[in-house]
Length: 98
Image (cartoon, rainbow, N blue to C red; front, side, top):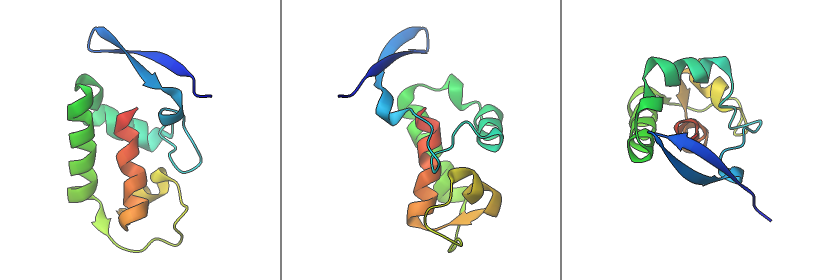
């Protein structure tokens, strides 16, 4: 059974499925480095559609392609490394969806 939570977005409320907004070992969006990135890019001021685009473009354009030590490293480690492959770079795209 999936539970929902209410998030305040741009003055309105949107129901977002909790399963997609929970921090995990790999999608560790609560990590300070990720929070700093989100804040420095002002992504929280964007609407949901713009957040997705901003995260996608950041990972595509600013995280270089390269093979990390493992496929199951957290998004914060990929940011720290400065490079990733398709699946590890994808971990980073999730952080702006929160």
